[in-house]
Amino acid sequence: MSQSYSPSPLNTERRFTREAQAGTVGIGGDNPIRVQSMLTSDTRETEACVEEALGLASAGCEIVRVTAQTRKIAANLENIHAGIRKHDIGVPIVADIHFKPDAAMEAVKWVEKVRVNPGNYADKKKFAVIEYTNEDYAAELQRIDEEFTPLVLEAKKRGVGMRIGTNHGSLSDRIMNRFGDTPRGMVESALEFARIARKHDYHQFVFSMKASNPKVMIEAYRLLVARLYEEGDDWNYPIHLGVTEAGDGEDGRIKSAIGIGSLLVDGVGDTIRVSLTEDAIYEIPVARTLVNIIREIRNAGQDLSIDLSWEDVPWNPFEYGRRHSSKIEVQGIPVGGGETIRVFTSRDKWNALAHKLDQMGEFQPEIIIDDAQVISIDPRDEAAVAELNAQIQPRMVTVEDGLDFTVISAFRLLAARVDARHPILLKDVLHPSDNSENDFLPTLLTASMNIGSLLCDGIGDAVLVQGEQAPGQSLRLSYNILQAAGARIFKTDYVACPSCGRTLFNLQTTTQKIREATGHLKGVRIAVMGCIVNGPGEMADADFGYVGGAPGKINLYVGKEPVKFNIPEDEAVNRLIDLIKEHDRWFEAPEPVGA
Image (tube, rainbow, N blue to C red; front, side, top):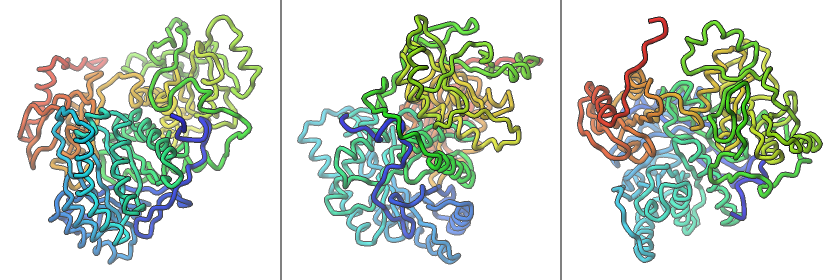
């Protein structure tokens, strides 16, 4: 691709975009990065929606989204909007639309912004394999044009903004059969809708490219921005960032930080939503902390004297591939050369944990950095780089502590300048923490963003968390980042959507029940989806799915295929276990140590 997604691999400056309005809130341009969330309340319950929206706004949420499943439900947005405005709160309301153009046409009357998903707006996904000729494809585009144009014209007339929001896994059959279930397919799907909007001189829109897999999400956004550069200067539309179905707890925060944070560091992103399977109010401090971290990075600036172009790096930012280092042994453990990504710790932390290593399960320290003879260099020091590259044997290398250098930029420069044969030890920070009272949320988000972003670039053969002093907590964080980045799978992986007004069961309690029953199934990926919108498509590459089919009824999936229907909710978790057993993926949980 002739134009990459950012000026250089070391860029931290924000990409400049045109401004898109959502009511009185500007997105992009000179505006700050906006934080948004989505109501979990049923859109038919006006008072509950108003109360939740007011709570979000008071917590710092700048844009609130509400689902609108049908035209009749969308009509109640009038009451929700009026109820919020009675409290003199100007937070913009966004209607979330899937499948139903008539719901969008109703919603646009009452809200400041409408979100449409190109994968299912006027498209019914059948997972059908169809050979589209160029004429067939053109006819499909004409049909979409006829369905989408009325909304574009009405939004333009009313001054309503729009998000053209592609989701991985809910791509239309048309896109799937031409481009596959790929980042490119996600981008092309969005651009088709954008061209229709532009044809009518409508520009008040933003793009999103959401996926539950951070690697796919990052690649899709990068590809989108690169394509926008190719299309021309007037395609500088704002970007909405989010990892969809990130899950709950620490895992959900880590996965969100990897996807959202890595793009923000690169200068991409104008508004963000952290999607957690928790009450929406808990998303706001995570998002705001991420924004603050990025602000601090940009305020610190970057060494502009370093010249590193995309032609100088050995990785492809649009397609994951692990850096080809040589395998070496460090303290008797193989590192690099495609081996498992290892977890380092300090001698002090190892000593603090030595008496209970047998109780720590998978969270084991593997290599002590103090004894590992790792070479630490400043990647800007050409003499140090040349000395390392002149060594006959490959050596473990890392970035020297104490440098005033953005972590991601430092390790990218290291990966570009040292020979690929030298394995790299990643660090979360270059200034190890000496404060045991540090707030853990910024520590967690910083570590996830820095290490996770580099892992998704294919850089790194081992990791070391230095920003967290607590020994056990730093190791847990190391392993959870590796899991979320798809770099080392050591436990069950969950894809769980955030609750919203479409949800047909209590997502939070159900997700916890499923975790308790299946949390020992290392390497199994389970999707927990509140409704069909976040069902077979959004599950993407999950092994098994638990999806709301109707009130009180659950459908079970193997991959994207529904196999069990209308199971009573109180039986569904046990039936999911039976399904996993049928496919020979079940094993009994080990007895706890000391039991």
